[in-house]
Length: 233
Image (tube, rainbow, N blue to C red; front, top):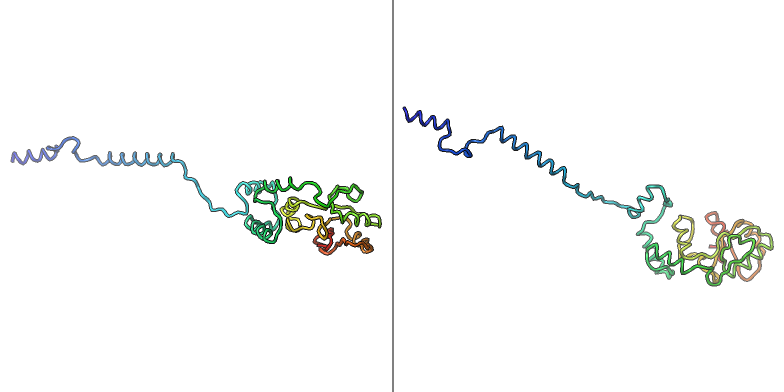
């Protein structure tokens, strides 16, 4: 009986176990778990956010897209993508067109600096029908002079252009031949071209011109009515 009482007392008192070996307190365990979860949450909150990657398909680079979004520039309807422009440049080179090397803005700027002035076989006539001082192919000048003397009252708005100037027109979305293929970029007959005001009047006046070289307009119709060249295109 005494042994049974002692055994019961030992069971209740945890005899044979150290303090560290006693059964854990359930409420203390729950408090510890809650503290661990709070630490984890704080660590996650302080962790730098991972970089977000986007799959972007665009016609221009990110900086250009940003400028366009700000409304600083306007893309002409139907503007070509970079890939399309490069493909056309390759085709023009295969066709024999002389195109500045490189595909950067700097290459075009260099092309402009290397082709300043009126070009070979072109002059800038200081006359009333050339108020904008446009360079004009030599063979066109006497024809326009004759036309002015015989009733044409218009003026020249464009004559010889550099490759760079033609490329600017292309980029602006204006109707124009591709840079490297325009008659405006050449001066030797049958190359060479001018754009004029009062084109209908000039066509009528030139119908009476009997010189050896012909300056023809109206071929392109309403698309480019002011354009005149040896072939009209």
